[in-house]
Amino acid sequence: MWNTVKTTLLLGALTGLVVVIGGWLGGTTGLIIAFVFAVAMNMGAWWFSDSIALRMSGAQEVSPAEAPELHRMVAELAQRANLPKPRVAIIDSPVPNAFATGRSPERGVVAATTGIMQMLTYDELAGVMAHELAHIKNRDTLISSVSATIAGIITFVADMAMWSMIFGMFTGGNDEEEGGGLGELFGGILLIILAPIAATIIQLAISRTREYGADAEGARILGNPLPLASALEKLELASQRMVMHVNPSTAHQYIVNPLHGGVAGLFSTHPNTQERISRLRAMAGRTVTA
Image 1 (tube, helix red, strand yellow):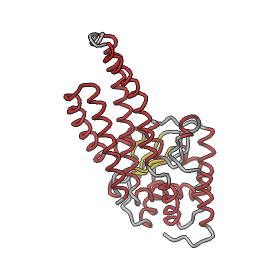
Image 2 (cartoon, helix red, strand yellow):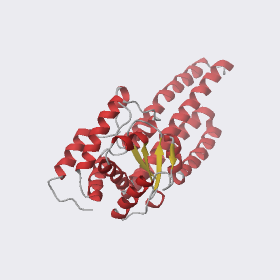
Image 3 (cartoon, helix red, strand yellow):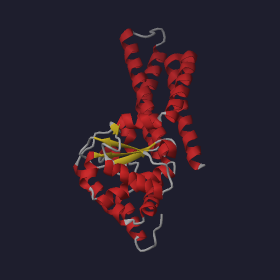
Image 4 (cartoon, helix red, strand yellow):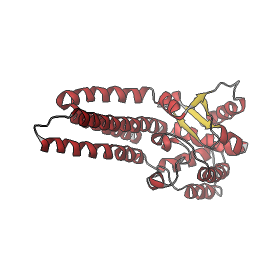
């Protein structure tokens, strides 16, 4: 229920922002066009969220023949979680990381980098895959996929506004009302600055606590919280040493934040990794069942 509410709010935020930009760019006509565009993009984000997320991350779906061990692991964990077996994808990157996507368990996909499969032990990788299956089970993946699309569209419309403003400056615009021209220029600059900030706020609107929930549920699926805790420790260290080139709008969907430092560190979409590790280790003293 809460995921549905969050999705509705995110889609509403996107629609409102695109409509505002459309009105600024083209008045009433631009507003109508922008509204139609926003509705179409919202529907696309909803129905094709898994394909969009895989394309933006450079993930390639693989068959059981291409990655037999990973498929076997995911199938066993999905059975324990009482979920349909998700599709499996691999990202050709030496940086260890993973994510899940799909608007529903029936359309779920788990993706892992080549780096994570090389770095982690079998049990640690199983812990990571269990975490990703937990996201699918909790339907966090719908929120992640839609918000990634929303953030990308917001960045796109900000660029559209910037180029529209630059084109207007080169063509001279309307010189009859200088004050109005300056006002539009100032409004355009504000729009270009605030739109990417709005994209960040939308990503931050996705509750960081969903990672804690996925950690706990993943530990129950696997039956042991320690492999995931160990994996998170390795992944966090690796992410600080190795740069993963990802679209910032998709950073929130990975198991550990692929972006560190600067603004990305200040506005992190992930909870503190050490706190996640501590919570998992605290679970070790209690009975963990799938």
